[in-house]
Amino acid sequence: MAVNFQLLLSEIYREVLPLQSQGALAYYIPELAAVNPNMFGMHLRRLEGEEAAIGASDVKFSLQSIAKAFTLALAVSLIGEKIFERVGVEPSGSAFNSLVQLEYEKGIPRNPFINAGAMVVCDVLIDQLKNPKAEILAFVQKLADNNEIRFNEETAESENKFGFRNHALANFVKSFGNIHHNVEEVLDLYFHICSIEMSCNDLTKAFLLFANHGKVFSTGEQILNSSQTKRINAVMQTCGFYDESGEFAFTVGLPGKSGVGGGIVAVHPEKYAAAVWSPRLNAKGNSVMGMKALELLTTKLGTSIF
Ligand code: GLN
Image (cartoon, rainbow, N blue to C red; front, side):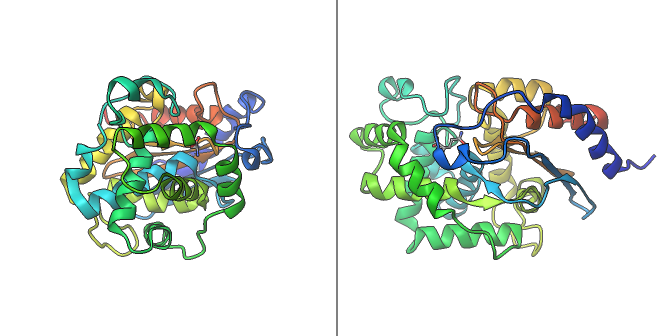
């Protein structure tokens, strides 16, 4: 029997609503602390084009670490697997902004999704692109087929001002020689990519790249080959939720990426992309309602990649 996806999302919304008061905003970034904590939106887009939406699915929010999936995809499309000589593919088991492993692993971040790893990817993009900010934004706009997607300058600035840990991380990696450019330039780019604002609706379109063997959903342009796409999905599966990646694999069973703006996007290769936004986070920095909504989605559909 064909699944009624709209009904499915309504059911999920009803079931996650009791969790609405759990968790806290990302207070360490002042702009994010000002968001209405009770927002919830979800969007599902199947590769064949069918879609379903609930709540604030077309309200834009701060991508934060979700953007790291886009910068990784762009870096892989430009220099291929060479990127993995400077950043690993192992889960860290530590918080996204932890400094400890970097010391004994000599400045090679465990993976491209912890902050230090994403900074190394930004450093590579500064090497490869003439105008990194504009070209990264154009890349994301193309994936989502939406020219209105922008950086939020206030968020980028506020994070730069208060991101003492990120400044420490970038300087630390630089001390090992794994950041080549000026630290301030790399951090400026890093804070900008984190500040990109998109809706769940935009995100499912963009993430279908990872469900579709590296082809842009709206144009069919091949950006990554199948092997590169598989590898990015593998890193999302094992590292996309920092020290909660095991939990996400265990309860949801899909590759995905979260951000401290409260967004989560998950991908079922060859089938669909699903995005959820709800700003209250658990202690690991992942959206409380978002994690539950995606768990319910794969449970009710009875499918995951496992
Ligand atoms: N910009 C955030 C930071 O660097 C991104 C972290 C996240 O979303 N997990 O702290």
